[in-house]
Amino acid sequence: MPRRTFGDAMPPHLRSAAIQYAMETVGHLQEVLQYSAPVLANHGWARMCMYRTGDAMDTIGFLVDEIALHLEDIGVGREEIRRLLGADRECLRTVRLARVAGPRCTKDAIHVMPQWVADELRDALTYVLLRLPVMLRSALRERDPLWVGRCLRPMVDSMDRLGRLANLFAAVHLDVYDESTLARYQQLVQQRSRARMPDAGGRHFRAAADWGDLLVWWDSYEVKVFMLLVMLDEQCSGPRWEVGDGTMHPAVRNAAVGTLNAVAVVTAEKGDTPQYRLTDGEWAYATAVSATLASRLMRSFPDPTEGDRPLLDVLRTEFHRTPGGRR
Image (cartoon, rainbow, N blue to C red):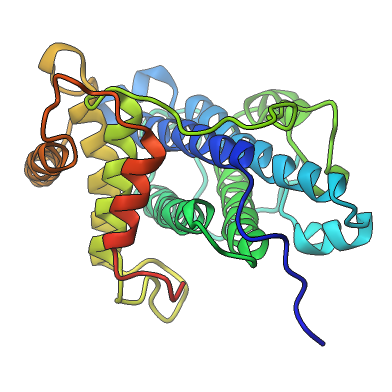
């Protein structure tokens, strides 16, 4: 039986949605990493990491819902949409938490994230960050009749990975916070279930007839972030992302975390250092990535004083240079 196709390529309004939500997701992931740093411990890592993990999960959910709305518009049935969204296996942020195998926090020691939790956090951020360019590459192709599956699968898997991370944050604090506090930190009221998608009452782009290409300045936040994603995609193309037990390969995780740190470096106001402390190795990696980004921007915008190339043109050109495509 032939596989169903969904037109030649992702519609323009969904391309705009993919770019917007991917950019927001990177920002949330960067903040999760930021609030895991010991130097910001007094800001409450559990609260802020749960907030931003939930925000990242819900932002990806907005994109998934955009695609589900489009599928409904073109006549795909609800059961087929649920299958494409993997609604029967979703991992929500939940108030029914299981005890974790690792040590839990106590009221006397809640201000610094345990190392084993930090390792899980970095694995989860890497998992999601590596899948954003996979989704974007398919979204930006001029012809890809199978774009729905290639865009949805990495995004629904990312939602579930973030759901498990949010549950872990809550589970290690079962002896510290009461159930209602954890529910508030996990933002359970606003969590987005794929079983209820498509949700026409959600935030969506489908009213736009044709968003077209987005004009951006060469040194804009959007261009910097997405060029960093392209560079990460290039660096991690080929090797396995995960080792045998499902954890991220150390070199891949270092590249992803380094890219998130580079986001903080290249977007800092007036050249200031990031507001959270980097180790010497992290700083060296982030600044090296920043220097490579500056070189890439000069190639992509030979005359940066004009600075109004469409973002989609820039991204298409960059993604076409990458050898990826097998994922």
